[in-house]
Figure 1 (tube, rainbow, N blue to C red):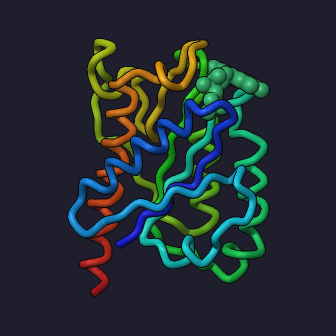
Figure 2: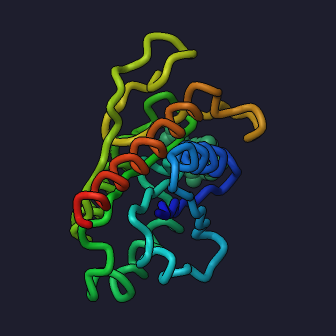
Length: 185
Ligand SMILES: Cc1cc2nc3c(=O)[nH]c(=O)nc-3n(C[C@H](O)[C@H](O)[C@H](O)COP(=O)(O)O)c2cc1C
């Protein structure tokens, strides 16, 4: 069972979050994560068509997803939306930004709407808000995994709990995709 993680990252912080999501997916027996960076250019549409779930990720830039992730979304109209290739696949999302709030929710809403337009099934976080910087979901969102990066290099930030929150989302998506697949068999 494969879960694709399609993400953008201008400066490496969201890429770190994407890596954590992948680690969470890979914790689930029989699941494997496939990371696809939209900045790399050629999108492997066949891998996306074959995946059991797709997790979208983007830095929040100007209160929105990045232009590169939006470009990917627009390209998917012809390759996936018209043929309804992703219908009934599990979907989820994550985002990272400089401010603790930073209007991250808008990015996740865009991803969830995009997934809905593709007929996908959106999975959010099942975590209460963390009360300390060490707890999961310290940013306190439910629609997807959120992370906050200070103006430090990606080796330092986002912090461990934000990465653990991202891994939790990856694991949750893989577990739900496995249940969904078993239900269809
Ligand atoms: C063009 C641009 C716009 C940004 N807009 C926001 C914003 O709206 N809110 C916020 O909190 N941070 C904003 N930031 C900060 C980034 O979200 C932050 O640096 C993030 O860690 C970048 O992730 P990346 O390294 O994956 O590109 C912006 C950064 C850039 C370059």
